Picture 1: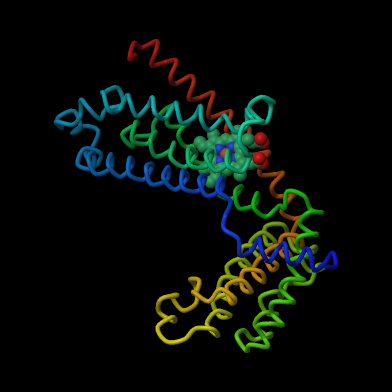
Picture 2: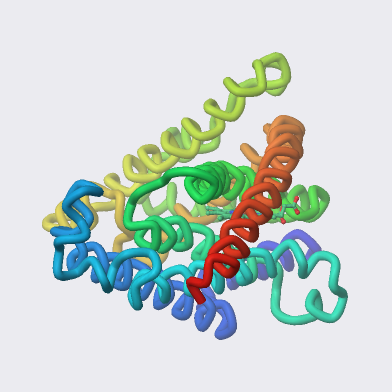
Length: 318
Ligand code: HEM
């Protein structure tokens, strides 16, 4: 078997193979954490809604005031929970500097947990503050909120940069081989039209991308990701029969046709990877700038939060 054929067989089996156990366990835990975080926030919101909508003047007369005010039993526990989340959030950057911590688990899984906590913390702190953001603590809250919101952009960019470009190029070649092979097979079976497969892989010219202003390039990248979803759906629609149009939401969800799904998966992976490599220098530059903002703001907000906690301690709230 030639090297190419071996690589093709490897990728083909990877594409169709089940997700490894460790990855599946991580995903299950991650989804469970998201469900838990949403449930906790929803429960507090529903319980406290009639209190939170009162004005500052009326709140002391509410029967829930002694529980929900920042120094009340629920309010205080929300504050402690927020602090625990911050400690958890900062474990991700600390791990980069502590070799013993870096040996535990895998970086992407740590980042996933960093993100759940980073998205949950602002909501928990908002409830702790009873949705009133004033003074030093208010300033800390808004910085935290901005850091958290900027994290979403950072996560997108993080996903755009293949960890090793050489690996990306290698697997892209492998994916191209597999995709060519599969599309030939599929063309023979008359399942997916070649023209639509090619449209999926269509990318702008490299020189044009290099000349785009950086912000436009990033928006362009995002639009290509959205367009790819529509192109995949269009591709899939060719293989849909009868009620499958409805059950797959017009091709946006996978069909039960394994051969079609394997070909679509391979082509979509190749398209995504080619796009990442094409935009690599731009996304690396923006990601570097993003770090320059995300990091100092994170530390600034941590300092403000520590001052806030210290002040409450001095004022005797603990
Ligand atoms: C209160 C909220 C958050 C704080 C305080 C925080 C703090 C940090 C810090 C200090 C770093 C390390 C920066 C560096 O090493 O240069 C980091 C990295 C990162 N954070 Fe956050 N973060 C928060 C929320 C989020 C959220 C909500 C997301 C995504 C939705 C996110 C995504 C990321 C990403 C993608 C990285 C870079 C990973 C890497 O390059 O290794 N963060 N964060």
